[in-house]
Image (cartoon, rainbow, N blue to C red; front, side, top):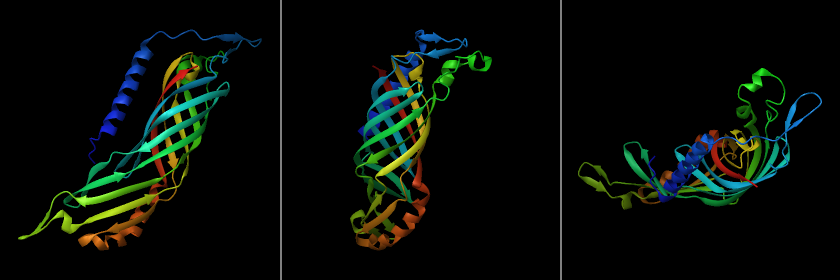
Length: 268
């Protein structure tokens, strides 16, 4: 699959910038965290300054050879030490065209994918107290363990439909006979998924280690339901619409799809 669209170049630039910022940020000295002593000689992070954050999101998902990406903003609030909720406002899209092989032939796949979406999720940092107790194992890399999180949530996708218009790139020769791409025709395919798409995932998020700005990484599995397929075709490909049920069966395994996200967060 080939994609050189401006949208993808923009996404790649944004991801590269965010990752570069993370590297520079990681090299700076860490600020000391505020700690409280208890009668049991253990320590607990004072989270009063860690209640809110706002930032940017860039992420991607795949279904077969198609790459779909999201971008938007997010707002989080700590509801307790190691417990956080997030609200997102995103836009899901893809490049307008990519190429795909169909046997020995190359096809242009024009895509029409675009939808506003919103999401809400819950995040749990199970090791947020790492280093607070006198256990030598946790003292090895306390900030690393504190940054690990589990999350679960759901996205609402207003228009959860993938639309494609496929046509051959070159004419087809059969002996001395030449069929032009117009004579062969095209196939329009629509793949519909569910509007409510729950997900679960893991992440590395330095929100609770005393940083004002933070780059976090997340990944997991998204449930989009069983894709429903319909097709229309023209000219010599007119009978191709009969393949819709077969394609729908082939996509049955794509009810669960992987996703990955990079987030830039600024603690308020």
